[in-house]
Image: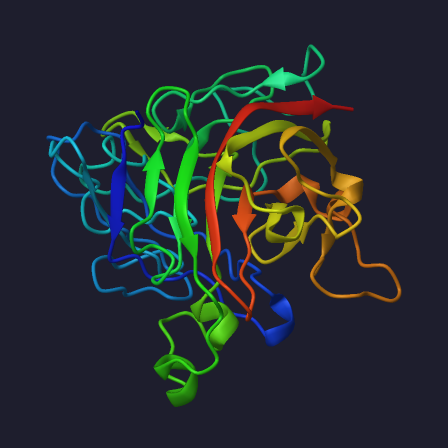
Length: 327
């Protein structure tokens, strides 16, 4: 039986036009939080970014959640920004915040540099919602779950051990809802598609630890020039159909995702940067730029349950065997 951590009070993290069809929106680097055990004090977001100032946190892209593990021990702490920062999912997020993080294009890990990859299919193995460095890919950071405020209701997450699983129902983009009728959206959303963007599993690629506090710093850009993409496995009882599930890589201001011709399905998936394009939810002519144009400044990768205006989208799936693919 899965250990479930129930999500409450999560504000959304997207805003875009009606053509988005579930696109995760702005990816400003935001506040930071903790890696301490549940007994630690609550963490607080402290980044400066669009959407700062949520009901329970003051930083990041706007999302801020409180998680109460089913065991009743501790909790995530007010202000832990589940997206984009993902600072230790429950029950291991807590502690006072730690601002900072490095600026510019750097690589994760202790003294490593991208470009010194030593083997094919470099494994990225999480432990309780965190991938430690240094490793062969020089990737380090939190792996975590997030959702818009509506999709977060009743959502469960399991990031214990090597698990990276989320379960729930992504909201319908309800044009007749009060937020959409009154144009009063949850910041930073500016339209209905931002209000109901869905749910996601995210992985920060370059997130260091403050040695004094053992807190996670703000994610910094990761130079993935030595890589050609990622592989991973999708499994679960309710894996969204390919039209409802996207893989994307993100910089501080852009997202690149798989178009309809590149499906994300149950089992092993291999996705190259050359196969990910900007605004994959639109028909682009000429073809949109690919992630090859921005891979030297990646912040995170994510698996996104997208929304639509016709129905809700149930999901119950896990991501495993994540590997970075060297060139």
